[in-house]
Structures are given as structure tokens and as C-alpha cells.
Image (tube, rainbow, N blue to C red):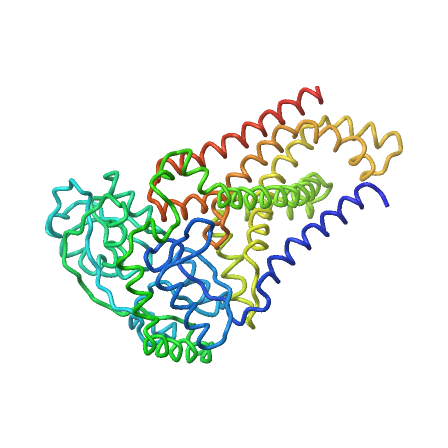
Length: 479
């Protein structure tokens, strides 16, 4: 076999292994159930990367009673609800309020918790009532009961709204003063304040509502029956009360596995080294595989772009225009949620595969644009000389034009590698726990935002510095 054939076979085997792992890692599970990533004390990540919380422990106890197994997918609340709508998961347990609007789309279990919404402000804030919000900005978490309530009273109190996908970023926005207040479920806000969030509650509970386990309307009736039966069973034997009391009356250190000493920068790094390492590995794996696939796609688009005639250039320009112009997050949602929903019939795409396709199409479009430019930068006389010597068009491209064009493109390839590395952070919206999402999960546990983001930033800078050195070395070797 030729070298390029060996490389292609190796790549396919490698991707097959990774894809296979993504598809079959939980093939024996009866159900796939989504949950939120940062909604303590209902769901949050503890030391070692495991998820704990009221919702998580209730689900575990109910599954044990009803003898079913499940794969847990931790996502943002908004992504979890969208995946349920698109049949990507079988159910959602994420402190989800039962509302008439949601009941039009989902079937809910019997309520497993009742909670109201409160308003919280920074500890030294002069805001005391909602009447003080006029003309100011309020932070909300997308899709939550707090967001629904705040929207319902916005006109009355005259405040502006800013949305976030997770609780921690919402809290920090209020903490640093970008927003003056946030609205959150009382047990969540109370737990967070008790365990380090520098906010204070300044309102009574409003719009008390019930939490329920959700499945898509008309789907998974068996799972819903099992959840209701299991919930009744754990309430009867006292397990339910034990779980509720454990989380609502416990200090954070007894739940997360961290100590006071772990709050230093070195302590945080040491305590979370394994979790950060897993996130870094996922980021590097996505980056390397995606850049290989994007390079292949980019070379194809580049060659099509300089082909004689109109068909090849038209195809190249159209693909580059579509995928370079589409925001990466929109493309990720379309591939992971929209496309399976369009096909239907239970069709699913593993998150890792969807992430790779997203990066390949987006980065491949950018690569195709500069590959096309690199080939066009080669003097036209080179092609004419090669053809005059009797070389066919494709042989002239492969042996004369492409080697010179690729030499011109080397810095652009390295730069695209760096861009792809950073773009992996956007894939957290479809449930991929890469380096940035890992940081978000750690902060949701210990609220040490500055130290953790500094740590994550340093890791990215180290990797990018190494890639820059590699770029400079390659250019020197070529020169």
C-alpha cells in the first residue's frame, strides 16, 4: 500500500475506535437521561468528576427500586430540554418546573419537589425590593422558573434582562456588578449562599411550583410509570426524606470532597488534576481529529476552487460560503439536535461525532478558503510549464502546483490548528465536557471562579505557545 493509503486506513481505524466508544460505552443502559450541570443542590459535579445532588440521588434510588439502568448526560438546562424534544434523550431530571406550556410538549411525572423563586443581589447592594430595579439589568438562567417569573414582572418593574446558560455565570455577573440582581429557585440560591456565593436573598418566595421528571409527550410511557412507582416507594420507606435532608442541611465540604486547604491555587489544581486532565484530553482529541478531517475537506475544496470550468469552483465557493458564514454554535445544535429531529425514527448522533462533524465543516470551510488562495498564489507559469512538458492537469497539480502552494500555506495551517483548539470550547453546548466546560463544572462546586479560569487560561496559553514554536520551527525548516 502507498503511504497515503496507510495513513487513511490508520485514520479510519482510529476514528472508528473513538466513534465506537462514543456509541457503545453505555449500550446496555435502558435509558438515556439528561440533567443540568450546575444546579446545586439538585445536580452538581463533585471531586473526581462524579455527579451528585437531590435529582441524581433520587433517580439512582428510583432506578434501583424499579430495576432499570440509565446513562446520565450532564448538559446545560436549555440543551437538555432541546435534546429531549429531538429524541436524543429519553428523559430529563433537572429541577424542571411543571408548567402548562411545557405540558404541551412533555409528559411529567408526579411532582417530586415544590419550590418558589427568590431574588438575590450582591452582599453590599442597596437593592432591597423589586421596585428598586427600574432601569437596571437583571441576570437570568435560560429556561428556568426564575426566568419565567422575572419576565412576567419585567414590565411592571421596568428592568432589563440578560440571559445565561448556567447558574454560576449568572451569579458571577451579579457578584461583579454587571447585573444588579438574579432570580433563582429558593433551595438552589439558599444552598449556594450557605456555601460561598457572595449574594443575599432580598425577597420572599414567588410563584411556588412543582418539579417533575419529564419525557417527550407520547413517548417513554413505561419510563414515566417506573419513575412514579419508584418515587412512591422511596417516599414510603424514608429514602426520599433522607436524600432531601442530606443536601438541604449539609455543608458543601461534606458533599464535594474538598477541604479548606484545597481553596489555594495549588490546592485547587492538585484536587482537580484528574478532572482537568480528562477535559484537556477531550479537547486535544477533538482538536487533532477535527484538524485532520478539516484539512482533508479543505484540500478538496481548495482543489475544486481552482479547477478549470465553472462546476468545481461553484461547488467550492458554495460550501465555503455556507459553513464559514454559519455560527459554530448554531451548526453544532443543527447537527446534534436539528438533523436527528428532521430524520426522526429514533435516529441519534453521539455528541463526540456531532462535535467532530461540526468542527470539520466549519474549520474545513476556512481551510478551503486559504488552500484555494494558496494554490492561486502559485505563479500560473508553473502550471503552463508543467503542461508544456506533457504532464496531465492532475499530475501537474499534484507534483508542481500543490507542493508550492502548501509551502505558502504552512503558517495558515498552524493558525487554523490554534483556532480549532479554541473552538472546541463551544461544543460544551451539546454536552461535550472539554477543558472549558470542565472549568465551569469545578467552579459550580467551589465558586472559585478567578482561580479556576486563570488555571484554564494558562493551560490554553501553554498549548498555544507550543504550537507557535512548532509553527516557527516548521517555517525555518521550509525556508
